[in-house]
Length: 516
Image (cartoon, rainbow, N blue to C red; front, top):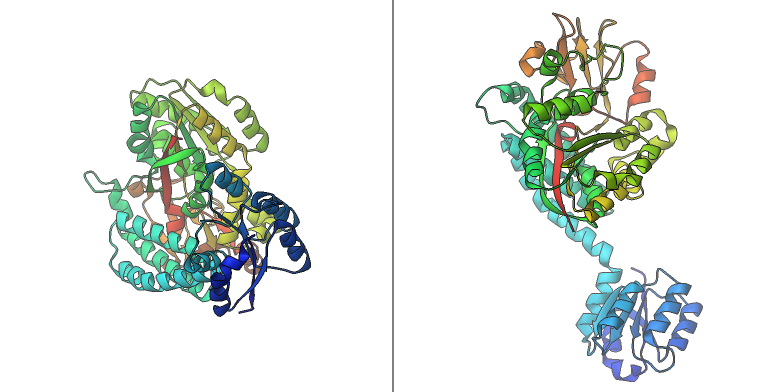
């Protein structure tokens, strides 16, 4: 490790000789000076790793020196040392982005701790995180062999995402590769779990998770009934890890009351899952009860044009007489217009908003080379989502909602997965086009790569014709036709798709928040 250079500024520096000797014995190189003016000269002449700065000095005060130091070298960490505990001094120093704040008299170990905290921070965190994950790895591996309920799967997935977010900040690529292999194994086992259990969840008196079609009735309605105004935001295609990436920005306006996972229905596609949320019905039932609103995969026309009508029918069926509105936002212009008019919603019992950006982003990655570059990994995809959110009209909507006292519910219709492995499929002209599921007659496919629903009615899906079946891609597979196979695979590999069976697509967040 290269020599760490410390600048210590104090008008009584001679009294600090024992502290300085202590640091030098620990292999820190310490330069001393007795005034703010001297300190500024030293910083202009040589590079320091950190500055210890006395607040109370004759001539230039500590705070004045701090301001000039930051103007000259903004990234230089400065530790303020003061005799005073006056609040305004602390506030001034913190406002000037100090690295730490120590009250005199300081002992050598305090100084050493501050140095390690500020200079060795990333290395220490990296070592500790790696060590903790190594211990947790064995526990996760054991859990994987035993997990057997939907709640255990939700807990395990949350644990995997926790470690993914912890490990992404460190430089140990080996650990990250181990985690990735655990995620792959988890998805393999999860697909087996879904294959065995999913059809049973529709049977009466079976312990089933909250799913797309029961979400509104079971989880949203109780909050509408108990709150004056509720803002429901459905962010299309938002994975759990993306929710964790934007959560800190939501937390500036809201405090989290609860967070849980629910299960998206199959196929994990917008046309099915989001319509199920707003209708409170499975797709097969939507087709029967609302033939004028439901379109099958192979029908012409938009598949998500009637969510408002579906919601109206559900509210009526539940006997809820509410003052409510529904808005779908799919562009910056629509978002800005909604922000401008948001106050007009303040007296509503329910303000439902569907925000389409993340879905647009995932599809753009397929179609635009620049987005492929910007979202080449899950980490980059999260970062891009985060960057969009904190500068988006959605952030402004949430801030306004907090000021007006709205309860906030944030959820999604399904997640998405980065597809890596192609699987050959053959179908006729009436076969649906989605890369993660297919429905139609005469489907030919690789059995090991799919979950099959030969009778769609068993899982409450519509049949295009009498002999239609559904197939769902497992884990990170995607369907490709033999014709022009290599071009097709090259185009879609490493893109974000949904419709199939994976933890990322099916196990999705539902968060309830109260205004600060």
